[in-house]
Image (cartoon, rainbow, N blue to C red; front, side, top):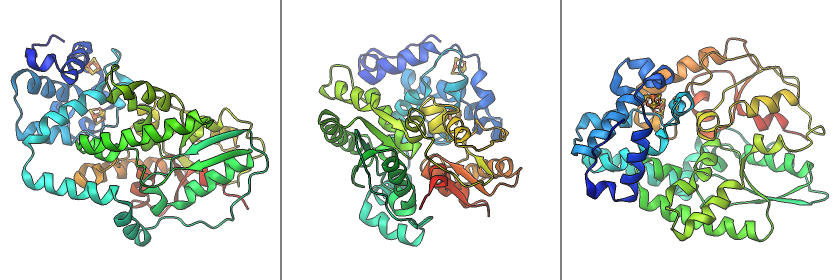
Length: 385
Ligand code: SF4
Ligand code: SF4
């Protein structure tokens, strides 16, 4: 795609990046086939290609209408279009740039509402109060003591997960302890920055992210081997840290190390001998979060691990499509979000499983609101006494 972005924009780091991404798009439209919002509305402006054109117009002619804000808002940032695109268009980074451009054009009341939600979700004291009311799972098994330890890992606590579903990290710690791995859990204050980043609060996100990089890099230097994430939405953010800095920025190299050392829990366990782990004989349906299959580019990784653990997984129709959770999307776009959840639940329920399992707290909470089938993180299947 040819571009005519004005000099003053193209000379900025974001402008240069956006120009390169736009030029890699050959406007073939293949991406529309796997875009959930385009499938629902059939409107080109609700497709990846349509949004790419909107961002191009914003950059080239400063054309930003309320429609532009709306169609960019309606994007789930699920990145299914990246998986489908034959030209490797880095849509995830482009939509972030587009949102930064359009943010000043948002009505004041939307800005106020979004900022209130952001502050609520990223302030542990406030969220913990709500978390006690809406708690999804509780810890029911005792903590296992580690016997021998040759390996040390940092476990990302997550900011909302400890309040809503503390059992996920509890079971993860037990599983890792059983494998002889020492764990250091980060504090809830060390939020990965995803919520602020996706709500265009870039300064707040960067402050958080730089703090994390300093703290986790120092731990990696002191001998910790990996950073483990049990929420794929946090994992993808941490793995994407290097994209937030120019290569000349002092944080860039440290961000690369932090990113390279980060593993989703399924990705990590696949490199270990898991023959000592036991599961109960439940029937399950697995929902693959977009942040894992499209964002982290790890399609099939959890499925492979679950098969090794002895589960028989049936293929799920439209497994590549988002469930509608998508961070704060379900709060700001409830109609589309609900429709996507209904579709997802329908396909996940076909075999009448005992449990629906997933790999991200956002998907877990969102799906559980739409079904009577219990929804868990898959690691909770390894709950042991
Ligand atoms: S993003 Fe990729 S798939 Fe979509 S129109 Fe551009 S080149 Fe084609
Ligand atoms: S990120 Fe998802 S919703 Fe957004 S354009 Fe791509 S496929 Fe569509």
